[in-house]
Length: 269
Ligand SMILES: Nc1ncnc2c1ncn2[C@@H]1O[C@H](COP(=O)(O)OP(=O)(O)OP(=O)(O)O)[C@@H](O)[C@H]1O
Image 1 (cartoon, rainbow, N blue to C red):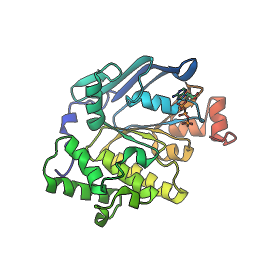
Image 2: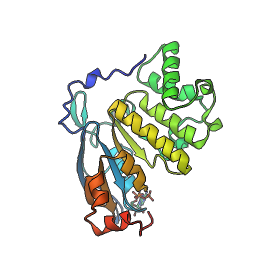
Image 3: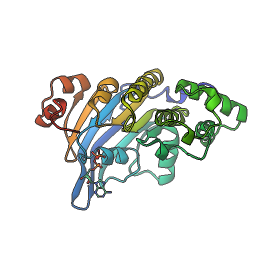
């Protein structure tokens, strides 16, 4: 099992949104989590979601990834079999899609890795979950993916706890991308890392996203992250989307007063 087979996606039209979100709302009792969020995400497109703490970014991402059930709204995912609303689909199907069609990179690698399993095992078990059976092929693909995320092959049998924070995050990325998802959700993927480590990780992510033609939704506090990775930007405040558009346009010519504050860094996000 070498390169990931993407032929099943051949019938997915580039002009059809990969993800189409309509009127998504989630409240926690009387508190607004996110409200009336709508957008389309096209194949190969990277959307950044920014906003201060408590603005609803994580709530939105959790609803999109199926970790949280929204109170209202649709999340239509373009599967190889056609469009499906992931909000109403059966839990078993959503779980299967979460293994195959999309991936989730957590801020803390511990939430996305199995810390007691070797690096190779972390990558290999994802392949086994989608049907790979031959040990030699699985190990060869794991070695290949460790290389792609700049982890030396002689570390394949080490457990993630023997890795630095940056290496753990790169391993989490390999574990998530090895099965060839179309869409990757990332929650503060560079949060908690040193600045130099962040820069290297961002470069790596940018390369992989482009090379694999991935669509991605990235939640971050860091405008430098979206400047580098995101084609489009969504700015949230109090659970609402206050501005969205092309990243350069939003950052260079922000229209909403809150975005202006964010960009001028007057506001600490
Ligand atoms: N489990 C929960 N129970 C009650 N309220 C919640 C819960 N999770 C989030 N909230 C509230 O929903 C709103 C949005 O929170 P959310 O965590 O989505 O924001 P965020 O932008 O991701 O913040 P951060 O960057 O700090 O993670 C906040 O008012 C928050 O207090």
